[in-house]
Each structure stands twice: as C-alpha cells, then as structure tokens.
Image (cartoon, rainbow, N blue to C red; front, side, top):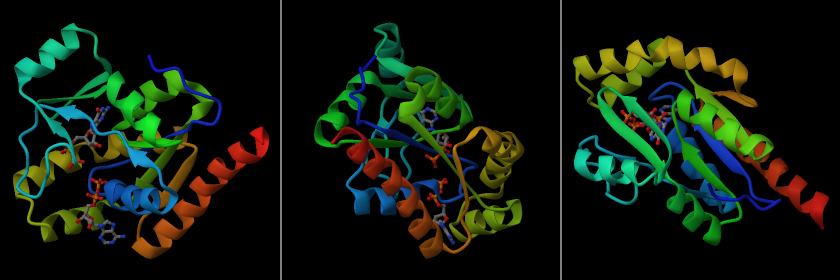
Length: 195
Ligand SMILES: Nc1nc2c(ncn2[C@@H]2O[C@H](COP(=O)(O)OP(=O)(O)O)[C@@H](O)[C@H]2O)c(=O)[nH]1
Ligand SMILES: Nc1ncnc2c1ncn2[C@@H]1O[C@H](COP(=O)(O)OP(=O)(O)O)[C@@H](O)[C@H]1O
C-alpha cells in the first residue's frame, strides 16, 4: 500500500451512475491541478472512451493475473465486469500531483476511507432519479442499460450519509463552483497547517 505523505489528499467522487461525477471532478480537478487515478476494467471500451484516459481496458485474463500478483488495492464487480485500482497507479499519480481523485462506487469509497482514513474526502454527487433517467436517455443509452443503472440507484443513494460532502448536481456551473471552493479549502488547509 502506498504510504501517504502528510499533505497528500485523496478525493473520492461517488454517487449514482450518470449524476455527473466524472464531469464535475474533471472540471474542478483541472482548475486545482489534481489528477485522476483511473481504474483497470474488463468492461468493453465505449466508442467515446480512450484507453488510458477513461480506464485501462484489460482482458479478464490480464485482470486475474494482476489480482493474483496482489497489484490491486481494491477490486469490485459491477454489472458482471471487474474494476480495480492498482497501487502502482496511485503511486505514479502522486509523484506528479500533490493530491489525487478517483471516481468509484460506494464499495471503493468505503475501502479507500478504511485504508487512508483522514486523508480521504468522500464527495457524493447526485441528482434525482428522473433527472438521471432523462440524461441517460439523451446521451443515447439503451432502455436495458438505463434500467440496469437505475437498479443501483437506491443502494448508491444510501451511501450519501457516510460522505463528507454532498452536492446535488442540477446546474453544472453552480456545482463546479461550490465543489472547487470545497476542495480548495482542504488543499489550502493542508498548506497552512504545515507551512
Ligand atoms: N469500487 C470501485 N468502483 C469503480 C472502480 N472503477 C470504476 N468504478 C465505479 O463503478 C461503476 C462502473 O460502472 P460503469 O458503467 O463502467 O460506469 P462509468 O465508467 O462511470 O460509465 C461506476 O460507478 C464507477 O465510478 C474501481 O476501481 N473500484
Ligand atoms: N448539471 C448537469 N446538467 C445536465 N447534464 C449534466 C450535468 N452534469 C453532468 N451532465 C451530463 O450527464 C451525463 C453523465 O455525466 P457523467 O459525468 O459521465 O456522470 P457519472 O460520472 O456520475 O456517471 C454526461 O452526459 C454529462 O455531460
């Protein structure tokens, strides 16, 4: 497990699929100079996705091999596909960024918090069910996929109580403004405490 230095923070974005976690995390992350640690997955790459940018897309054999070598800090299964964060990827991104962020389901958020304690800030992003359904439909997701994603909605929503911060993502600019301000406070607090 990577040993965190005092100033290093891990921001974990969690919440229901389609709530806008990726969108707001990327926008705030680029403003604050925080980089994302991406996961490895056996899920097929979507046409809009870039390998090494959205995920490391690997085969089930490659995943099993890495898991047998104990390379993952955490592994989860979603909709029959495997997802895992490699310790070496966390280490690599920390070398080029003072703090990092990840976009994970509730199990990943829970595991990272258990491992890294106060260094982890869980940010819960959500929108109401109808809004998510509408956004997924507009983005062209099939009815079957929408139903699969919505089947996890209540379970993901139940995790919001455990998170340090909760944002309802209605107006994008508004969410990103509030979120950036919140993350900045953690980053500045660390600088002030240690300087
Ligand atoms: N616990 C955990 N969750 C992950 C990991 N990688 C991705 N996830 C989350 O698991 C879910 C995967 O579903 P998917 O349909 O692939 O989501 P998308 O990539 O966000 O469109 C999403 O909620 C991801 O944020 C991981 O390594 N660990
Ligand atoms: N506040 C918002 N209003 C409308 N659409 C949004 C908003 N935030 C995100 N979106 C859109 O919703 C979709 C899902 O966002 P995404 O960031 O991929 O969600 P997640 O990472 O939580 O699954 C994307 O098409 C994104 O452009």
